[in-house]
Every structure is written in C-alpha cells, then in structure tokens.
Image (tube, rainbow, N blue to C red; front, side, top):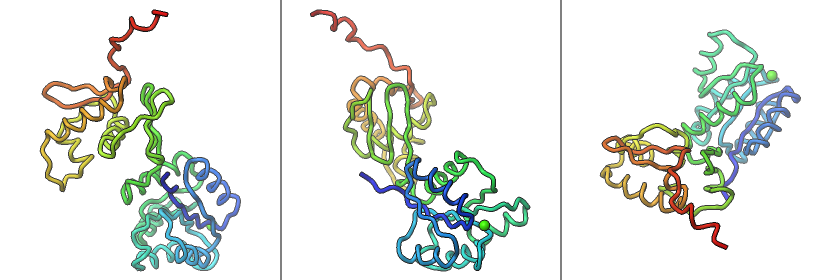
Length: 241
Ligand code: CA
C-alpha cells in the first residue's frame, strides 16, 4: 500500500481548517492542521509534507512571508504551495505567486476545486503520489493503491502497463499515437522505439483478460480505449447445465 499524500494546512480560522481537513481525509489525503507560521515551521522541520495549503492572513508571520522563506530553504523549496486567501485583487495574486506559491485559491472555494488544484500541483511536482481512481466501463483503476479491478476482481498488471492503462483511461475514446504514448508514459527524454508501445499494449490486453478488447488498435493512427468493449465470442458456452 502506498502512503497517502501529506497535506499541511496552515490556516488560523479553525472552522475553515477543520472543514478542509475533513474533506482531505475523505478524499485520500493525510492532512495536518496548524494555525500559525511558527507551528507550520516546526511541522515542516519534523515531516516534509507533499503539499502545503497556506493561508495568506495569519497571526504573526504572513503566509506570503512564509512562502518566501520556504522557497529559500533547500529542504522545503520543492514542496508545492497553494495560497488560500479571501483577497481577490490581481496584484495580490501576483504577490502570492512571486513569493513562490504554485497556485492560488480564493475563499470561498468548493471542495472539488480545492482537490483539483491539489491534484494538479502534485501531478506537476510528483506525479507518482497523486491519488485518484478512474472508472471506465467495468474497469476501475486506483492509482493510490496500484489496483486494477474488473467487475470487482483484481487484475495483475505490470508497472509500465499500469501507467499506460492509467493514461488511456484518463483520456478515453481518443486515439493516441505511439509517439504521444511514448512521451506520456516513458517521458520524452527517453529514446525508445515505437514498437515498444505495441509490446506493452499487447501485454496490457493480456492482463486485462475479457476487458482487453476495450483497447482498440486504430489502423495507421495508434490506440484508443473505449468503454464499449467488442462483444465477447464466448456467449454460447454458459447455459449447458
Ligand atoms: Ca486567516
């Protein structure tokens, strides 16, 4: 089992902090709440979070001042920071981003928006820890637990096939060229022949069993995953008892 992404919530309004924490917990994150900059510093010194939600207006040191300081600390500077604030003026946003925040969210915000922003910064900084489940037809994939399920039974899928399936499931019904899959799954700095994609698609189809037909080869173009799997040939076998 993978660890849940740690989110440090630095917010002095306890009702808001608690609401954020509850929502994060329900959505597969491990939140820690602190109410001021001093406690926040102690927390990041003790355990480095995966992402920091940082309120702008805090008692004592402001969120902006904290963000600036953290951006200069070797250990913390790569941790994504999302600023939370009631301010809406453009100049404030610029100031927050200048201070080193990765993103900015204005109160009041919806839980869905907050979760989407957290996942987006995590995906940019650390794609491997983003926690999400994708469902397509009878197939579901949980990136946090590394599980692929077909109608409730777990399938064994290799690591590259898992990444490939994850990407396809997040972009269903679209045709992906071998080149674009290489860039997305293997990274564009790696030199690998396009045939490699075919090998992994073949393995992936085998791992998926009956759902393997969901991955279609589009001649001359690439691959596509679709929820409309081709009808199975084995229809006549069942009623024999
Ligand atoms: Ca505040």
